Amino acid sequence: MKTLFLDCGMGAAGDMLTAALLELMPDQADFLQKLNSLGIPGVEFKSEPSVKCGITGTHMHVTFEGAEEDEGMFSPDHEHEYHDHEREHHHEHDHGHEHDHEHEHDHEHEHTHDHEHEHGHEHSHHHSSLSDIRAIVSRLDIPLSVKEDVLAVYGLIAEAEGHVHGMPVEQIHFHEVGTMDAIADVTAVCLLFDALSPDRIIASPVHVGSGKVRCAHGILPVPAPATAYILRDVPIYGGKIQGELCTPTGAALLKHFVREFGDMPVMRVKSIGYGMGKKDFPAANCVRAILGETEGARDTVFKLECNIDDMTAEMAGYAMERLFSAGALEVYTTPAGMKKSRPGIVINVLCREDNREKLVRELFRHTTTIGIRQTVCDRYLLDRHIETVHTKRGDIRKKVVSGYGVKREKYEYDDLKKLADESGLGLGELLAELSLR
Image 1 (cartoon, helix red, strand yellow):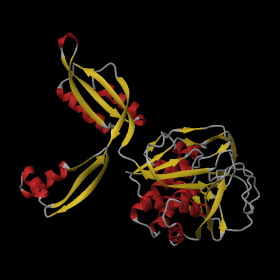
Image 2 (tube, rainbow, N blue to C red):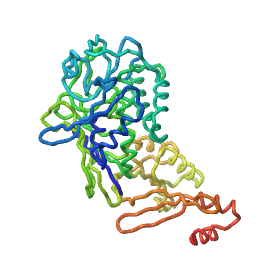
Image 3 (cartoon, rainbow, N blue to C red):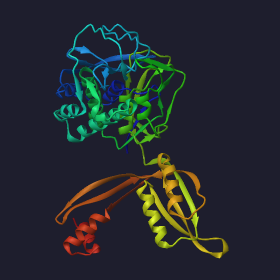
Image 4 (cartoon, one colour):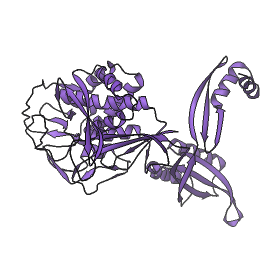
């Protein structure tokens, strides 16, 4: 299985993820040229070598109308501007591109700035609505699936900013300069994920930094409110490094693409990419992307179970349906002999940690149990993917599983049933016909 592991031991930001994934591409120059031909208004991508703690990697620059800006985002009115100043806030920053501020940390970040910007270059400070952003993305020369990814990531950030500032997402306005930077970073990462096409994406727990930052509205904790909101249900930690290490954009990209967070699995490594930030820390300031092959997969699930001896079969069936609807990975029953010689059942529910509490509530609500047992289980999984087979009867999906020395294929029952009903064949006859292809 083609597996991508993202080491976020120094957080994550849009430019760092772009650079790390770019280093995994077989022809980096060609992909960089592709990025510059996307049609994002006024934007140019540039990459350069960068060294952190003796490790050589890539740093990405995004320029808008010839000048490098930080990734800016949302402004609910025309008085406040939200920028992602290389993981910085209000901040008296030192941008290194003729901004009179002092940086304290160095990545991208987006938060309120209620101060005057005295730029050494000038831009028109227009603002765009979320519908304007959708229009910009719709005109980009990228596949439809990538456009959907870009808008989904942007939607996560907009939702977080709307929640933090207490306003509907559609009322949020985006600062023009920062909008182009943000679209550039998000689009680049989405395109790179599409080009690399990993079957499995895993990330380490995310180091968000520690301490506090000073913004227009006062002193805020790290992670910043928008970042913290996006990273709900994601394993994060603070550590001893003072400053913001994970930006809202980096957080949203991880939240959208990563389905597993944990240690790096056993894998045969094919290539490694290092995406560098600007700031120097005691630890190498980078995101590391490792691409390789894994055989099968493992994950951790929770098993909830309870004994039932005073419910009808109809009530048990309804409870199982409700548990599946609530997000259970699996629900099944096993017969059991209960106290007082009563026949009964054990209801077993497999689930992930993020919806465990919801399923506990559903079990209590829809069954007669007064107690639920919990077990943490490690699972071995075969790699799986769906293929579409074209037949004279119509298209049919086929599940292909492999790993640990085995490989199996199976047609999807719903598709088989549909074709059998339409053709007047029995399932056995249809399967026999398919096997002759």
